[in-house]
Every structure is written in C-alpha cells, then in structure tokens.
Image 1 (tube, one colour):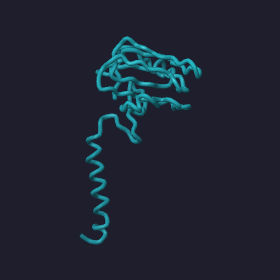
Image 2: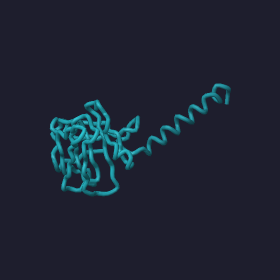
Image 3: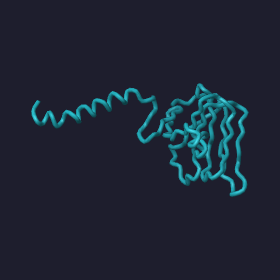
Image 4: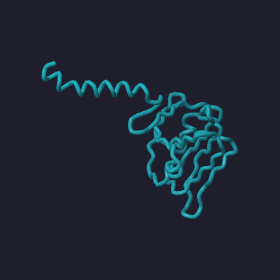
Length: 151
C-alpha cells in the first residue's frame, strides 16, 4: 500500500462502518434524534419522548413549533394517558394511538391556560403512543380516529 492508501484507509473504514451501522437504525429515524411520522403523504419530523423526564417535560416552554414538527411520546404499554397544558405556549393537536399506531382519540386545538388554570385532557381510550402537533394539523391532513400513522 502506498502512502496515499495508508492515509485514506482510516477514512474508508469509517465510511464503511457508517454505512453498515445505518442499516440497523429503526425505520423512520432521521438526523438530529428525530423520527419521521407519516400519514397519507404528510410527514412530520418529531422529537421522541421515551424517558419519564422527557415525557414530563414534553413541549413545555417551546414558544415556536415549526409546521412539520412535533413530539412523539412512546410508552412501554397501552394505558389511559392524560395530558395537560402546563407551561405549554403553543396550541396543539394531541393524537392518541394504540399499539398498532391506530388513532384512538384526537384532542384538537388544546390551548395553553393562564398561570393558574391548565387544560387537562383525559381520553377514555388506551394508548401506547401520543403525538403532539401544531393546532390545525390533524384537520389539515384529514386525520380521524381509526386512521393508522406510519413511524
């Protein structure tokens, strides 16, 4: 191997390893720790809230949420899950899904409260995933209970 080959070999190995590791990433993963959520050709790039700490914080203190962004809450099992709007500054559509990613409940236009009163949403349906998007997103893409999202 000539000197050029010796210099380029580590770069070649790095590129090869990156390509191999990308094969094992979950479908829908994106750069920057985001996941793509799709419905009928509409894609949202969402932050994932898997840990208890991330789930408790949610979209609190976010003052601007880009139109194609949101947050996906991922739980280990299906259960009734209540959400509230404390310290949430943007109106949201909140979508509850079962283990098959089928929409079981949608709260459209959940609004931030004042410093003393916050809206809490208590769906009767069990969910394993909850998706928060900008208010109006569910209506814009025609999302209804029974629809299935891809992620």
